[in-house]
Amino acid sequence: MTTFQLVTIPLLLAMLIATAAAMSRRRITPRLGLFWMMIWSGAAVFIAFPDLSSIIANALGIGRGADLVLYLSILFMLGGFFGVYLRFRRLDEQLTRIVRHLAIRDAGEPPQQ
Image (cartoon, rainbow, N blue to C red):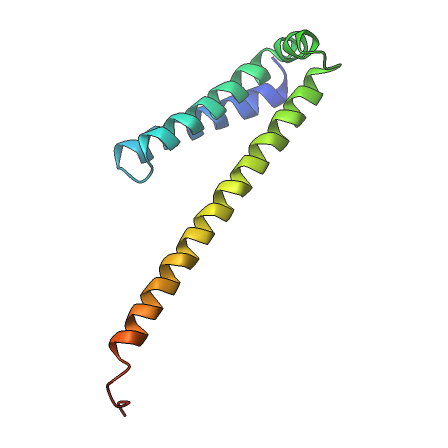
C-alpha cells in the first residue's frame, strides 16, 4: 500500500462517518447524505484499487483511469454548480415576493421615524 493510500483512505473513511453523523442529526437530507457517502466510498475504492478505474475507463473507450476520474469530477462539479444556481434563483424569487408583499402591506402607512 502506498503512502497516498495510507493517508487518503482513512480521511475518506472519516468523511463517510461525518456524513453519516450529519444525516443522523438531520443536518443534511438522507438523499444528499447517501449521495455523498457514495462519492466517499467510490473514491476510496478507486484509491485502494487504482487498476479498477483503468479497467472501467477502457471499457468505456477512455484511455486512462485518471482521465475517467477527471471527466466524472467535471460532470459532478457542473451538476453541483447548476444545483447551486437553481437554489440561488429560487431564493431570489422568494426574496422578491417577500419584499413586494411588505411594500404593498406598508404602502398606506406613513414612514416611521
